[in-house]
Image (cartoon, rainbow, N blue to C red; front, side):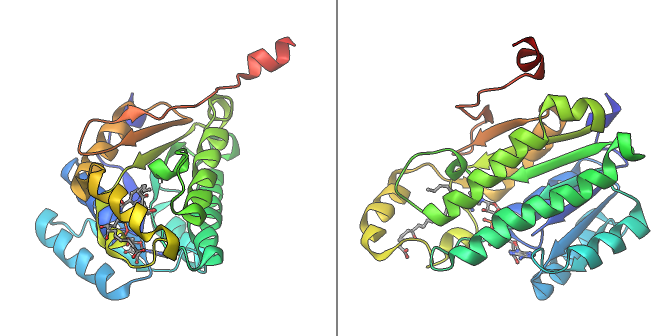
Length: 264
Ligand SMILES: NC(=O)C1=CN([C@@H]2O[C@H](COP(=O)(O)OP(=O)(O)OC[C@H]3O[C@@H](n4cnc5c(N)ncnc54)[C@H](O)[C@@H]3O)[C@@H](O)[C@H]2O)C=CC1
Ligand SMILES: CC/C=C\CC(=O)/C=C/C=C\C=C\C=C\[C@@H](O)[C@@H](O)C/C=C\CCC(=O)O
């Protein structure tokens, strides 16, 4: 299936200046993607990533565009569509963890992810004149787990999973030709997990204990899994990737088929 081959494709990765996003960019470039556009609000890290990745992979295949996903969708998407067309792949990866700022958490992780997905979906969709594509949303195991931690973050990631299961549903794919799936990583060593904005005070002890006993993984593992899933994942699915292990389909997904509804 040519849609599942990376060779020659153009990808956009939000939040690709560091952490999981950077690892996804690096792995896409390792696998013959033609160009990766990093959109990030950290200008210094974005320029550094562009330089490092062009040094490593050559050919000016990495392009950094400064942008805050909560503010600059119009400017950045117009620039991208003008230079590269609707692109083949969008990785909605940029996200924050700040339990002291629920509004910013929802605006970044949920609202901006929804709006970026919508903008690129509409450009890519075959029934509106596009050529199809793939949108990968980076959710989290927090997107479906029931535990007492990080509840604003969890609310934002439930939204990302809901968007993926609905917009990416097979029924929509049949007309749009846009595949959408989510990756739900567990604890991954990045700056986000070093932040001190995680838990409400009364949870510090129990959360610390959880992070001591939980399985951790490298960002590069998530990057490798993103490439694997690009080649194998069906639309409207979500995959958990925890502790450096291979991905497994995320639990608790009840699929409502349109055939079933129409048969009632
Ligand atoms: N590190 C972890 O344990 C896990 C992380 N995730 C998710 O993975 C994604 C990436 O996280 P990490 O790499 O760990 O974080 P990170 O903090 O290392 O990197 C996030 C990147 O996103 C950028 N970013 C943040 N807000 C932005 C905005 N408004 N506009 C543009 N760029 C923005 C940052 O500048 C940074 O370069 C997030 O969505 C996070 O929720 C999911 C599961 C586990
Ligand atoms: C429930 C976690 C599930 C999914 C992973 C995810 O999406 C986000 C993880 C976010 C944060 C993980 C942080 C881990 C931190 C540890 O290294 C320790 O530093 C925790 C120690 C104290 C926390 C107290 C505090 O400062 O709030």
